[in-house]
Image (cartoon, rainbow, N blue to C red; front, side):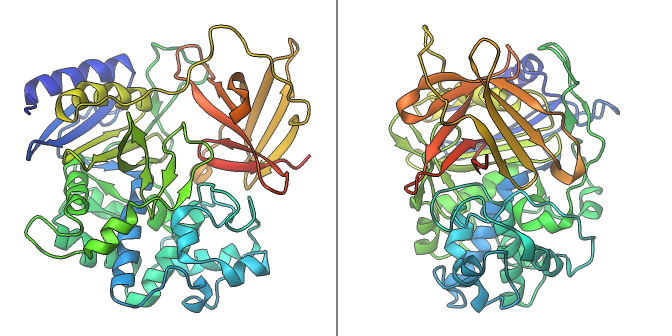
Length: 461
């Protein structure tokens, strides 16, 4: 089993150009060695070249690092995943008093709390940022009842980060560095911009409005994400460092030098299925603790993705072959690039391919969505499902407050039925884009939800 570094770099350059990704950094661990490649530029405004030691924002892959810290506390007997969070944080509360009293760390780590999840309130840069973030949760409502389904929740990881601070007596950033990054050997992984600026760092890029397949994205209006989002998605790292982290998990919690970072039991527990995902087609069919758990060609993987302002990161681990693949990018059609790169690498190293998204049937399927038409809302997002002039279901998504205050225009997308019995539809905004699943899901109490982009949005009207 071999990987040719020169060929890997050449193909990464070609594919990045094809999918209009300005810059990319790739690390593949297979056959006992790690191969690195880089392509393009870190910033189309400056033309600085991407190198294999360049830093990218890893977004929500951060959650797997935060979860590892939480599980260390479980190992130390300081935390029980199934006890209410208020036992550690008596000041924590949300709008629903029953949720306040009952929500557990397991709910937070598996995205089953139902707490409104996409809260990126900037409460400043002070060291008390997570304490103040938790105080701001008091007015948050529910996307769904506690434990009733699964909906991606950044908010929960801010709360988890504050639990880490209280139980360790250290800032989340400090606990991360001292308890995880240093013992694992992640020397190029940081949380604060003043550390990142000592190295080459990627700038995010956003699509040109009404752009076509050949248009390159342009530099985003800002780089930073609020520090309050730290435990959910603020980490900046190299692709090689993420491979180092993943290999620690492959070794069931032991660093490369033998240092025990996490108990083997906790490392294995993180990748045990905890909850089925209603939209099993987008990323994974189950969620573990921190990790999501896809199945490709009948084989179990674990991993996570991350997205910030114009940057996207991808991490997959194939434990049965000791294979890790990490791709860090700074804009463009990143998910398509990742699939293409994975399918260059995985047949040789792991004997499988990454599946593509569901595709529309050759002939349109008849559907009656009269009972589904209406409005759906969650924190800062409104969805309107209605028939278009030709009767085709159409979904309009309006983001009322984007990530870190970056505004987005409404997204209007036609839905095409793939498996109406399973509630599965697909959509895409542009003809050249990949298809994206949209799942219509009903809970046991007959309440209706649209699962899209990993989030559950309830019908409100």
